[in-house]
Length: 579
Image (cartoon, rainbow, N blue to C red; front, side):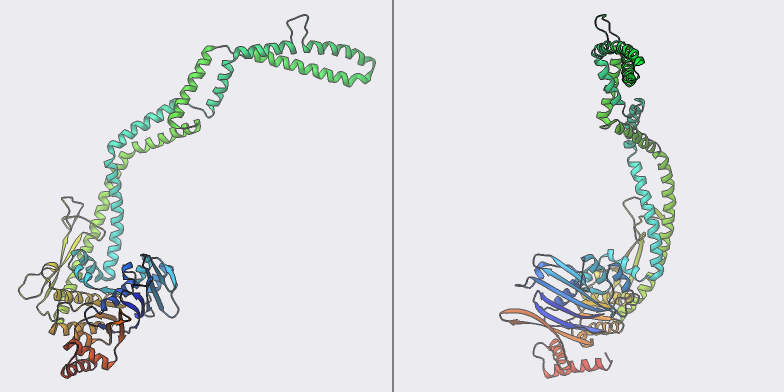
């Protein structure tokens, strides 16, 4: 329940603070006094649209704060927790909205800054606001399905949850199937490309680091003559000289070792020196034999050089196309082969999907048919209840009908439900439209075509009165519910609002004295000038002020004594419960 609201610097409002009560609260005032501003402020506080133009001239920002009592709304604890808000122990909830002249806004719940999405999610569980926009939208069939479903209770909600799960699976499979069917030609082209790439890379029989090894071999082959000359000269100098007058290092060391060995047999102290020289001689021999082996291994084959260069060129071409390194080229070939396998198996997947889509369609059709049957039963009850409500709202001959038909597309048959081709959506296969006739003998027709403003107001009130029996919305707000009505109809509307106010909080803006007199708490909105500026103010009326206000609504700004007496009588009848 809405306990109080504080507003600063909003449009004509400099500052107001209002304490609401349970039951039926009413706001009255002259045309243009700012009654609807109060409703706008409440809408802003619970996540409605914000406009920088609503900031009062001369102020930097407008601030609206609303306090609610959640002590009898256990379900709100879960809603708050979903938004990361801890419920207050005393059951109060404070929501606020600040709008700056630059267009920015800030939302708070219990003092904590939250997103507008979070504020709206909480706000839509606290207040239902019905203004001119809602009355106009009631004529649109697009809203009728949701209104019907809101009367369906847990059974319909569970059936819809089951249906939506099946529908989601079916739609996902249909999308995948459509994509496969649409890309058949593209898959064929892709298969050709992948097959070529995989074959080109695999036929090359690449080995990791092969290019580095071949590059080194090419350097050797290209410089074979220089290598042979250099190694041969070193071999002669170290091991086997071809010139008798220039012995090799090995020959010199061997001759020196023979002399030193003879000396060591005479003086044993020369043995370490002889051993070192023997080691040097052995090393020279080993080096010589290694150089001889390398010299003999040098290949002068131009054919091998050409083969190496051809292989390196082929590797370079593959690297230009598929990767900077051989590892990347090899990986590209592996990936192409895997992708090709997937494309090849797409036809198998296509056949599998076609079968699954058909099976899922049967599941969805069955669930949709169950929902349609539930809606038909619910519609019968709702038609009866709303027609009874309209009779109590001074429309005894009114007839309210709910037309349910299967949705049809532009020749596209997605499902067959109960033998009828239809188009499925997330809410089923039904299209719902409310039909209305105000007078006996008239054929019920769509609301948009026949309902006057006064009739539309009462139809809206009848619908909300019936739906209020099945929802737990704590506060209902009606802005100009009295549009286009008067006389007996106004008394009937007043009585209905008062009855709704016995089970929940009702806040209404009205121009009619009959509705104002039916309220349990009465607020007046006035415009006045202060310091050359127009301001809107609001206050709760005491019993005498209330007589004067109802008298004004009955007879103008200067009501006669008779008018005031009539106003007092209306209020006394209310107090005695004889409306």
